[in-house]
Length: 359
Image (cartoon, rainbow, N blue to C red; front, side):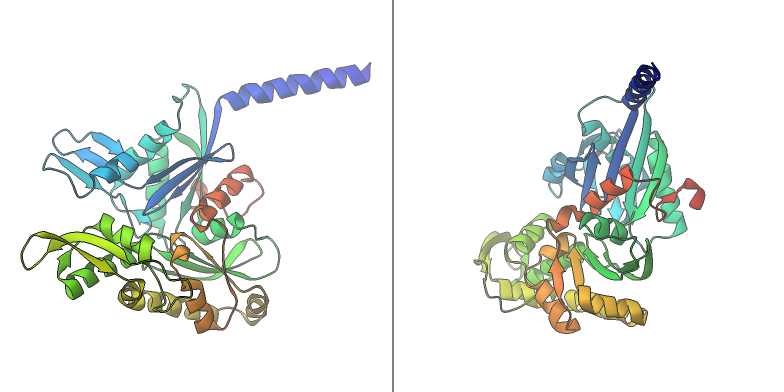
């Protein structure tokens, strides 16, 4: 009899939980300078460029993500495209809100009237208290009832499967669009870190400047991004070199569009200074690491995540500089959002999550 009552009670509780879960929406957001990714129910539901297209006259948002990126650098005076995040933090508050709202609406279902939204948002480790507050306020505007923040290196460590709660030191280098985050993680915390504002965007700018200086050809941001993907390299000599890439742009001498072909070694030369600054930051982080953790890092090596980890030869270059083993994470572009998703499922367990009260 007691057994039947227990089953009934259990079924009632399960039914109540299901009913409550119907009103609960949980999402993890990797709010990146270049791309924004959203996880819901353990799946990546949004992977879009962090950009919005706005009508200058009315102020309304015309497009978000891929559609806005197609308009980027091709707009007339009535439309402007805005990248709301600069160096990993919100630079344009209004545009950031409409971008987050647009992407949440893209998930594919309309918001329920009484829904309780819970969010975990990823932020750079070098962020200020004011910038943290801006992220919280953006979440409030899209009606989030429970918002947590997680630092990017911590999310990256979770995403690549490291046990962050163990008393073992791991160094994660996350090269995103706006910032490179280097952190030594142990016992659910960041022991020492370096956050520099040199990353994917800076590489793109280097390529644009090089093409202007060396070839007298003017190219846009999107073309420079394609060059980086097709022939981007951190080393001027690669074992498996990519094919030369044809670039279209405007000749600065004649003003007429023209095409030139460039090789990966030229791009390696143009990115050299920026890559050197990332190497210096890695060495600085290693210098400030406590000796016992440094001994762990010698055994475990360094982990590379983020879009910048896909730059050909970068792992070999950092390995040569530090004399340590460097591993590129599996699917480095999504490591941070996967880690944010893990944090979303375990908000009670992880002490390193920042909530509204901590700011």
